[in-house]
Length: 178
Image 1 (cartoon, rainbow, N blue to C red):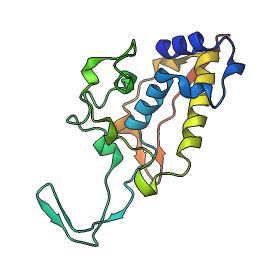
Image 2 (cartoon, rainbow, N blue to C red):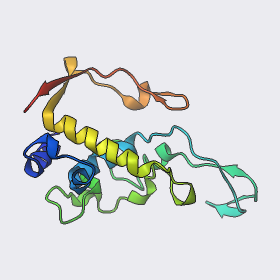
Image 3 (cartoon, rainbow, N blue to C red):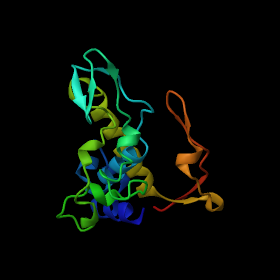
């Protein structure tokens, strides 16, 4: 949180300067959002596709078979992401960034596709990223956050699967910083 707040304070002298253009110029803010989407993708299920008839991992999948891939499972694979169960926004930063950590340089970042990809990519992807960045930037700029009663969750154990994630209550105290 401190790194994100530092980036915001260096870029803005007032929260009113934040808009849909300026928030897209913040690499650490973008990294925090990408890492959040990797750890907890918005969809709980893979989007169905029809196999063209292909071999996958040595197994033939006949043409017309409906298949899907779990985004959550892919982004938790240690062969794709170093420390896949941990929150590390630094994995999304370019090597030129001060917070870049070479531990993550072999991560297969393109394995994380929270909005799908190709011709079926979510039509609202740009709006979603703009809204996420504006909201997180404003909250992190104007408030410090702390968990109430040092609440800790094992998100993997306590989440429930429905059409969307059902997560446990998270009690957070916000304190105005500006």
